[in-house]
Image (cartoon, rainbow, N blue to C red):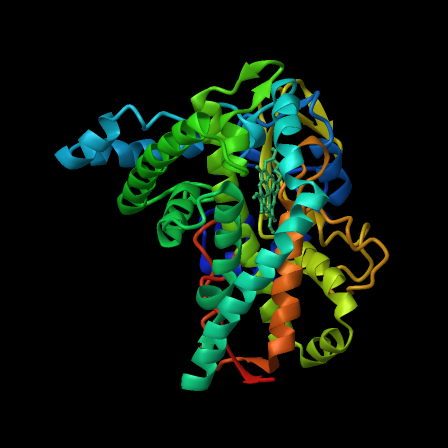
Length: 429
Ligand code: HEM
């Protein structure tokens, strides 16, 4: 045991975020299911329990997937503080602030959720993803040129900033049909809007960023929706702007909520996946050589890194009725934190769970994309992006190694786990 506890993780201590796995192992080995008062939730750590709850939308609700309501208290306290500043009071008073706050996709329950998924699923069908692959290759090659330029100039580069951020951001912007607009602004919106996920005590500065970005995002996309309603184009934004569910148009708020989820859910997560794979390859030269020699293993490697370093560590459900999990009675109304990252290392499901094995028989059975009705619609997109990114990286660079000056710092969240930077050295092939 590392001596870390789940409280340290929830309070976002860097050591616990960087290596939460001994904490999860302790949770899996304990009897029953523990309740954590700071989190306000029961913690579900074993594979079978997490999967069964994910598949049971009858008894478990998704209305608060990022945690119980008290998680919003710090956000509210920050907002009250900011109200004292006249400039911010104007932002907070604007009627765009509450837009998009409706139950959609991630935080919706059946039957609404099923209707919404029917609408968005076609945009992520395998043939649609395949059609986007040439663009993914082009963007990857462009980003790799920057990586190579850095390596030639200084011998090292940060692959998070120079490589892993750019691909998902550019591709989702392209899919939405806003590709030529300001990617740096989208990235800022995405980072700021996702901030409260896994951060239950944000600073006033963080709350300020969240509010300003939410307002800018809302104004921008309301305008884009209006344009697409007037003259539809072939893109996801037009699909959403003009969609009808059972003959009814989506409301503006539902449309905004969906767009927010596409922008936010797909960006940081896929960036973190790509960075995690590069780190593992840089740390394990034998694995790197094996995968470079046999690129067919890359798909399995992507799955293994999703399993071992789940970018979404865990999300919440709320019990609709009294339930029992692993012999523990949980009353209706209580929240449960489903730890995907722990379930993925459950030795009852995966043999030698802490080892990377791209050829393991059940390589795709991890819960990094969830399971059941809320299974990530962007999974195919993320998988293709990661496969293409790693294939081209390995083709362009040899001897990828960690640079000596890494601090391996992770983002400030107990839900979304990812390196803020990763410096590597390499030879250009
Ligand atoms: C490595 C990358 C990704 C990871 C690890 C990931 C993880 C997840 C997980 C665990 C869920 C299930 C949530 C739940 O059960 O409550 C989910 C849902 C979702 N993801 Fe992803 N995701 C990734 C990429 C993407 C991408 C690229 C997009 C879109 C462009 C996306 C959009 C969504 C949306 C809209 C939902 C909500 C679906 C629903 O509730 O029906 N994700 N994702």
